[in-house]
Length: 592
Ligand SMILES: NC(=O)C1=CN([C@@H]2O[C@H](COP(=O)(O)OP(=O)(O)OC[C@H]3O[C@@H](n4cnc5c(N)ncnc54)[C@H](OP(=O)(O)O)[C@@H]3O)[C@@H](O)[C@H]2O)C=CC1
Ligand SMILES: O=C1O[C@H](COP(=O)(O)O)[C@@H](O)[C@H](O)[C@H]1O
Image (cartoon, rainbow, N blue to C red; front, side, top):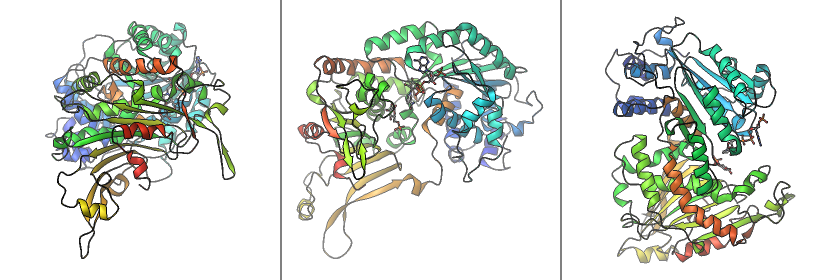
């Protein structure tokens, strides 16, 4: 593994973790990157709250962090091992110098695994964020040898974490740790065979920890959870299970899924992923709010007149129509990703950064949301369009979509939060496929300046007061940025104003590669940190909000408004916004 530069921040961290120095200042840790920083936070929070993620409730052996059993000197243990060995003295903590980690990707032949999971594991490996004793096991029905599996994974790996095009020998050493086990999803004996195979890379260690990533269709979640839990749980360490969305289609199916999964898994073992929570700007949302004096005092109905959360994609559902048609954009994006953003945005300050404290606040704000009614929802569906030399297919042109489907590929929703902070403030959410651009952002439009001395100057310049209010924009993707629109005097003689930006564009300010959301989230599972995972009561509340309206849309067969592929979406979304005196910020600022 990477040896650490003497005197470097990582070295300081390692020395601290081995008990050789006092804790490094947070500033130093921040500069080592998100993972190290989170590991530090994790240790901080774990001092307050012991981990409870072991499926086998066995007492934890406490060993001093010394040489690993294969004789590797402590200086060469991976970052994660070095950092976490500090917690070896705490009961319930993972001591990576003594323990192994196996990540089982169930559905190993699938799209998500190839697009996101293997590249994320590889990036963590290249950054030395995974334990020394780490292996990947692919599991699916497709027949593949280890070699074929390595070729399959190899094709999806890129070297995003270094400036060079190649990650050198990391590529080969990573693939050497990857194994493939074919099997059926509901056959315990196949999972037993997997488990036996895993013991091959787990031997010689005190404890073997296992993560099962359920990268499979939801119809087989329960079967796999049952088999994995009965036949392939770790016999000595913890077992954690990552569950991908969709978590049901409505309140009833979610409750049923939970009942079934809870026969095999405890809540502590379950990591429900919403990959939006792993995005850099979303993680920064709480920092922006609670680590700066200037924003939190303004964060209420007193100063904010509306909040917009906008998701747009410039491609349709091509190839995924069959899946998408069963869900539609409200379930696919709004009920989960956008609602998670709203709950983080609008929650009260948590007691601490502990996962449970944060999630308590998110649930509270979800419970304060006013029940949605049909007149606060607009649905749309994209139709085909002839472009210059190219024809763009409509949603219904996809062979996997049932003819005449009313499935919405666009929706806009006005939400209200009935509490003292947000009473009367519209939270406008919109999400759409096959629109003019790909963009996800949060826009906070502030109220007008009362008695504005410059109002005549603003209108003189063609800027009405509505357009010239302050706006805080958090652009989640692409080209991550936070900027604040302010009114400013145009330099020179006279008094002319314009609106300009205080601009924190990440790629200009930070010379770092931003980790993919899946990297952050998988690392958090390794560390047992649930801050960025969804608790079951959050989902209960989210489904309670959306189930009635989804049922109404479906039972009344509400006709989606058609919009051309590549356009700005249905006009209805503007009527919805204007009903609350709002203009969509992305339309006003098309040039940004
Ligand atoms: N793909 C994406 O971008 C995203 C996916 N997700 C979620 O992640 C999970 C995995 O997604 P994805 O990889 O796209 O899924 P896939 O459809 O690619 O399925 C994954 C694997 O599961 C097996 N499989 C597929 N259909 C069935 C079936 N009907 N019965 C049994 N096994 C089946 C196949 O493996 P084999 O035949 O070899 O057994 C397949 O390779 C899903 O829950 C999805 O909703 C979430 C966000 C984004
Ligand atoms: O969960 C989903 O998210 C993707 C968008 O994710 P992003 O990280 O690329 O923004 C969306 O395309 C897909 O329909 C949905 O299921």
